[in-house]
Length: 213
Ligand SMILES: C[S@@+](CC[C@H](N)C(=O)[O-])C[C@H]1O[C@@H](n2cnc3c(N)ncnc32)[C@H](O)[C@@H]1O
Image (cartoon, rainbow, N blue to C red; front, top):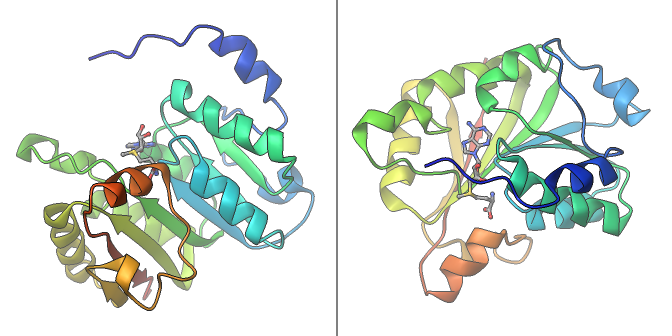
């Protein structure tokens, strides 16, 4: 189903030009974009940006690039960052399939995958953001020994992800099947989807995968 364009999308995006980076097909010079060489963390599928805004405020020493392929959704995230006057976040409205044409090798220091669409139907397996085709791209842009942090409410998708990481030789650590009653609960930052699923009493699954290359 095609999503109808939100009313006022264009002027809202224009008002967020400071944080919305246009991608023209070539790798982006992130040091020039941010005006510094701080570590670069990438969030893929940021949705409306509650996590993005909170983690960026908590870590002003880190640069965050938030990717979201739906402009209607991304614009809400951009507005949160504009409102909070944060200087360490930029957005790309692109499909993560393009990662290798956007980032240089070994340039990224962490990737966050928060409540990625599980795509439960078999014929859409390749769209899952932990499918081996995506893991291959992450391996290239993520520096050696750096991590992917994943959270999801979907047990089948979590098990699929664990298997994909293992098959592709990533080291797994700090795994929990009930994040909110685990050692990582205190430092956890909730996303929009996480708040929704937690309110329904669903456990949250979490893992870290290390880029052993
Ligand atoms: C289920 S939502 C979760 C949003 C947010 N991370 C949260 O936890 O509240 C997943 C988001 O990922 C985005 N997404 C899915 N596949 C993507 C891709 N290949 N590239 C970029 N964004 C993607 C969707 O548009 C959607 O906004």
